Length: 127
Image (cartoon, rainbow, N blue to C red):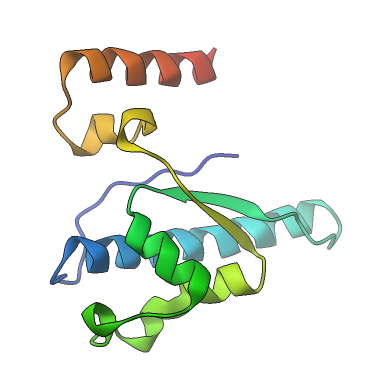
């Protein structure tokens, strides 16, 4: 099961780290919703952990450790759900390098060789 979304954020972020944290928390909300659907379909059986991949290492590092430093002390408490999901083992967070991230096709300008590589990865998963 794959869920992907690209949209303009409704909050103004002061850094890429904050923007990625906001996006990660939004993704976690989708994960919780999808888990409820899977549990309903599977007669209440608890679904396995969900893999959540991102390309910002600092966001993943802070969510895994639960420790946010001086660059994030202004974050609102509602942005800490990503860390909570990791601590409760609902999600497994991992880093995906930009050269392997198909979402970059839709969100960034990429060089021709990277474009071809990412398109082939997407087509491979569709077939």
